[in-house]
Length: 180
Image (cartoon, rainbow, N blue to C red; front, side, top):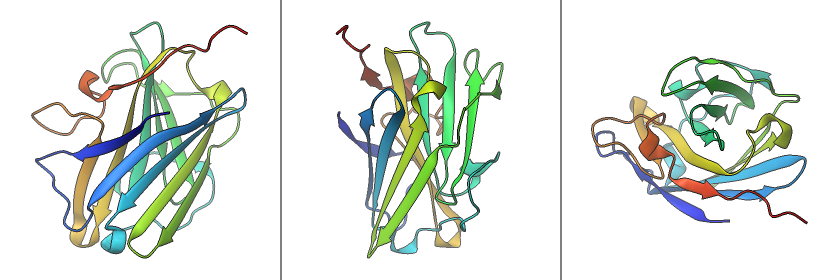
């Protein structure tokens, strides 16, 4: 699977973070596993451990996100994944329209590992919580550094302001699985 070097939106540049990369590690019948790597993470603000629970508003601090549009092309799903182990999942019927909680049969697993000036964040989402393939998807991150500095990272951005729901952010592609 492809590794993406995410781009910080130019209207919200980081102070110390030097880069964010993201990728799908694996997708099988049970789990989708993802990884984000944050370089220059020495001043990164991480929310405190809070245990696995569905929680709104995770994007207000450091948070990693997956946006997935299935083959119908109209609606999409959003998954917010926090280093605190909190998570959220939503469905949208169109661009920022028709938001509802997305059913997730078991909580995603969020695993942050910090060493030196690097943060590795792995997440596993139950495959049964995901739309059918093929996908257009976006891997994104909200990064908060000390002094309240926030940067917004995505594979691609709309020009005006950071908006992970914008169609420009759905720049990743994953084909439908081949028949056995």
